[in-house]
Image 1 (cartoon, rainbow over the protein chains, first blue to last red):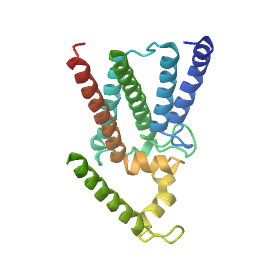
Image 2: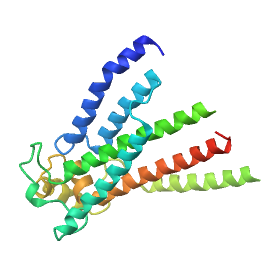
Image 3: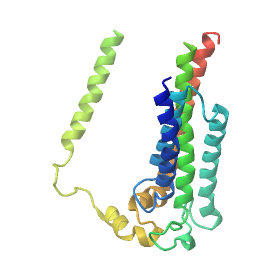
Image 4: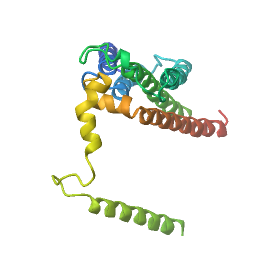
Amino acid sequence: MHLVLQTVAKLMLPFLQLYGLYLIFYGHISPGGGFAGGAVIAAGFILYALAHDAELVSRRVADWLNSLAGIILILLGFVGIIRGSAYMFNIPEWRGQGGQLFSGGLIPLLATAIGLKVSSAVVMLYYYLVGEKKNV
Amino acid sequence: MKKILAGVVFLLIGAVFVLMVAEMPAFGSPCPVDPGVSRYYLENALADTGAINSVSAIVLDYRSSDALGAVAVLFAGLTAVAATLIAHSRKEGR
């Protein structure tokens, strides 16, 4: 691969990751959310993998993170049942002041789990498809 | 024969979609269904959930089971891709 492409990909990676994390953690205050932020984080990893022809996150780690995020998401839904209301119900005591980072109850936690899930799933999809090209 | 069948099925599905679009209300006309739910979301999202972004409030609080379903669909798609590609590479002896 070309040196310019490799250098630009390496320089872009932290900014893409930071922007993805911002989209996830500020999803309840500004436009964004788990799906969009996860896609941006996965785009950073895919850009690095395309430029360097190397896997920054190994396939095993991405697989584990994918399963872990799914389990966390399902378990967060049971918080509502434990507290005596419906599945996936919010925590009213954690509602907070609207506009602050720590507000919205379970919403930021759910967005974090969804972002982890989406980013690892998209990276896994990329690995599978590139591995298919290498096999043929 | 298979191509003709596929073409007929394709045309039927396309006709259904065109009929669906023809049934839609004109652009700018008032909503034909009761807008009570969406108006409730817009007015009470901040008081109910504490999130300023009402899209996040709807997706992750009022309709959080839908978000779980979307994640499940993503997982199913990833599983389908993995099953197809791994089986394909195993059949070729690698």
